[in-house]
Image (cartoon, rainbow, N blue to C red):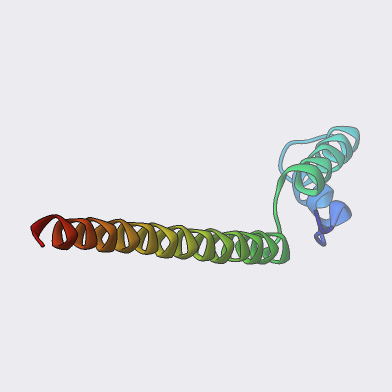
Length: 91
């Protein structure tokens, strides 16, 4: 994932003001920064995932169209064969 800007010093200072000791605030800020860095996706990460999904969807759509065309062609050939056999049978 792409690194996001997170100001650990500013976060730690905000924690220290009301009720955290300096050490508690620093540990909390470091832990929070680690979670952000390892677990959260950035907009870029999400955009890349969307692009990969769109590409896969386009591939699947192409495969589906090809399968449908093959099926239509096979059915058409089978129909033509049945029609020809019927005509030969009648005459």
